[in-house]
Length: 74
Image 1 (cartoon, rainbow, N blue to C red):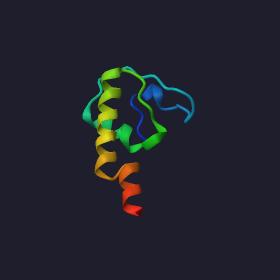
Image 2 (tube, rainbow, N blue to C red):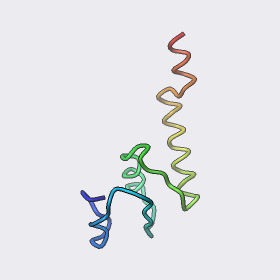
Image 3 (tube, one colour):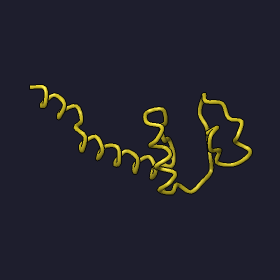
Image 4 (cartoon, one colour):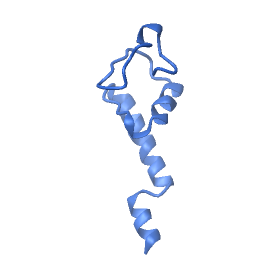
């Protein structure tokens, strides 16, 4: 957030606690969230949370979730 603030008034955010933003969740915004890995959790809106869940599940399936990793080591 400090590198690329969403808005000038957010430029002084600290890297702790929960942040709340009112915005339209675009593809670019989802990519930004994904770039932070498991350091970010989408709580609301539920539609964005579900999109992120489906996307991360798809990535897990593609790159071998826990089951594929266990199969590969056998």
